[in-house]
Amino acid sequence: MTKNNKQSEIEKLKTEIDRLKKELKKKKKYGLVWEDKSEDVVEMCKEKLPIVKEVKSREIITNKNKPVNLLIEGDNYHALSVLNYTHAKKVDVIYIDPPYNTGNKDFIFNDKYIDPEDGYRHSKWLSFIEKRLKLARNLLKNTGVIFISINDNEVAQLKALMDEVFQGNFIANIIWRKRAGGGNDSRYIAVDHEYILVYSKTKNPKFYTLPLITKQLKSYKHQDEKISTHGPYMLKPLHEPTLQDSKGLHYDIKCPDGTILKGNEHQWKCNRETFLKRLKDNRIIFKRDRRGQWKVYYKIHLNEKEGELIFDENGNIAQRERLPLSILYDLVLNSEGGREIKEIFNIKTPKEVFSNPKPVDLIKHLLNFSTNKHSVILDFMAGTGTTGQAALELNKEDGGNRQFILCTNNENNICTNVCYPRIKKVIEGYKNLKDEKVEGLGGNLKYFKTDFVDSEPTDKNKKKLTEQATEMLCIKEETFEPVTNNERFKIFKNSNHYTGIIWEQLAIPEFKKAIKNIKGKFSVYVFSLGDETFDEEFADVKQKIKLSPIPEAILRVYRRSFR
Image 1 (spheres, helix red, strand yellow):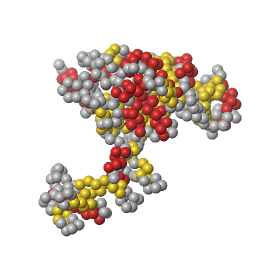
Image 2 (cartoon, rainbow, N blue to C red; image 1 turned 90 degrees about the vertical axis):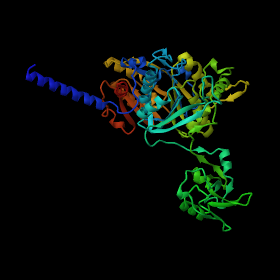
Image 3 (cartoon, rainbow, N blue to C red; image 1 turned 180 degrees about the horizontal axis):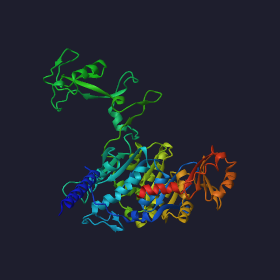
Image 4 (tube, rainbow, N blue to C red; image 1 turned 120 degrees about the vertical axis):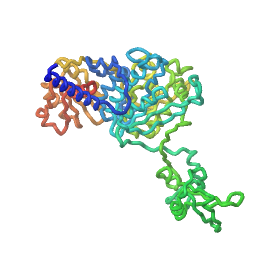
C-alpha cells in the first residue's frame, strides 16, 4: 500500500469514527430501550388516512342545549389520529385502562393474542402503548392530566415510558385496593391492589380538592371560641418518643402548676421555637391523665391541616376540602364493576357481556379532583364505557356539563353490544335486576365509526378527503345541527355558533348570501388544492367569520402524526 493510499484509509477511518460518535450522541443516555415492533394499524396510515363517519341511527339527544358526547368505534390509533385534528389541546383529563399484558388473552397485537412465552411481548406492548400515548399527549390542555390503570406486569415499564413521553411530569402512583384478599393468581403473597399512574402535560396541572368525609370531620371535635380565627381542631400529643433522637427536640416545659417536664426525659415533636410560638397562639393544651401526671398536646385546626373552611350562615361547617390520597384502601372493590353491569343489563353474571369492568366510583373519584363542571374527558380504551357513566353521574350530581369522548374497537362486539347500549341505558333509564325503574341521567351522544380515504396527494384524493371530512369538522366545531345542505356547501350550528363547509370556490357568493341574515359567528372551511386563505373573497364579512382552507390543515396534522 502506497503512502497516499494509507493516508486516505486513515482519513476514511477518522471520518467513520466521527460519524459513529455523532450517532452515539443521538442515542439516549438513560431511559427505557426496547425493540420497536411494527403494527399493522399504524402501517396502514401510510396508505390510508383515517376519518370518521356518523352512525345516525345511534344518535341520542335529550337536550339540544347540552354538550354532545362522542363514542368512536374503531382502532384507537385511528381514532386518536382524527382527534389530533378535532381536539388538539382541548382535553382536560384522560383516563385509560389498557391491556395488562398478562398473557391471559388480554392483549392483541396485529390480530393475534400475545402469548406469555412470547420473547417480544414487552416490546410489542411498549410499541403499542407508546404510539398511542404520544398522540394522546397532543390532545391535553397545558393544564391537563392523564390517569392510567395498570398492574405489576407492566407498571415498571410503563412508568419509565411515561417519564419519557410526558417529560418527567410525574404526579403520583396511586395504589388502589381492588379486592379483599388475593385471588387465584396469588401464590406467595396475596396481591389485592393495582396502580393508577398520574402524569400531567406540563408542570402546572389543574387539580381540585375533595370534600372532607364525615369520619374525618368527627376527629375535629374541639372548638375554639372564635370560629373565624381558628375554628374546629383536634388534639395531638406533643410527646413523641418514636422520632429519631434529636437534641433540638429535648427541652424543659413548664406546666400550669409550675411542674417542669424535663427535656432529658422527653422528646417533643417540635423544637423549642415552634413550641413557644404555639404556646403564645393558645395552641398548646396541658391536661392531667388518670394518674395526675401532666400531658402536653397541640392543636391541629381543620383549616390549618386541610385548607380553607367554608361556613354556613350559622357558623357551622358547610364544606370541608382535602387533598386526594395516594392510597385508596376502602374506596370501592373491583367486583362492584361487575355488579353495575349486571344491574344495567339485567343479567345474572357480567361474563355474559364483559368481565372485570372498572367500577364507576373509582373513575368518579379520579374525575372529582381532576375536572370541573365544563371539563372534556377522554377514554380511548373505553371498554364497557365506565368513564362515560362516571361523567354523566357527576353532571347529574352537580349540574355540570362535562363532555366525554369514548373510543373502543368492536372486538367481541364490545362497542355495539356493551359500551353503546350501556351509555344509552344510563342516559335514558333502565330496569335493574329487581325490575325497578332506574331514572336516566340525561345527556347527548353521537356515534361514529372510523373510515379511510387514500393518502396519495392527488387532486382527486384531496377533494375526496374534503368531502369525507364533514363529520370531523362538525366534531371540531361542536356544530351538529344542519341548517343548509346542498351540493356546493353545507351549514351546521349549535346554540351559539355556526360552521360552513364550501366544496367549490365558485359557491362563495351563494354561501355569503345564505348567511347574510344569520346572526352569530361562523367558522368557514373552503376547499383548496393548495393552502389559499380566500381572505379577499370574504373581506366584506371578515368580522363575522373565521376562515380555514381544507384539507391542507388536516393533512398537516396527519403528516406530523404519521412521520
